[in-house]
Image (cartoon, rainbow, N blue to C red; front, side, top):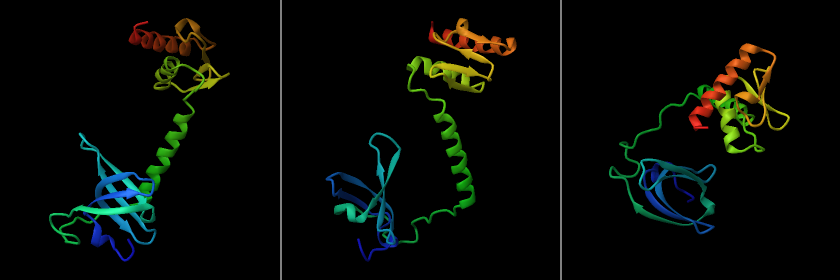
Length: 177
């Protein structure tokens, strides 16, 4: 794709074949000649959703044009991308990373999906962590042990203990147990 610019190819519908033999049909969203990458917007069948594929041009073994934009390639009718406030994006990224890191600590691969659901119900309203591999610690004062029901709670703070038991009873009622 050497010698091409984004203005020449944006909006063109293509069918590309990758070096690994995968066939992708989509519309070129942009082409970056500096890094030699093409961004293809791929429609997902039977939905309004789209995949965005970023591919190195050198990874493509074949490119076929299967359609051109109605207004023409490089026509001013093609919309320009809106201005992006980088500081806002970095702030949003930071919050998302912080949230993902926090949520990753909530997952316990050593318990069943049902037990994980109990933890997820508790953590929605109270700070919880896993301790000793399979014990849920709530508000640093209440402990929920197997079988993870209201009767398996212990703790020194009666108000917190009552609240955790209430959530567990409601969660059990929601599961029909």
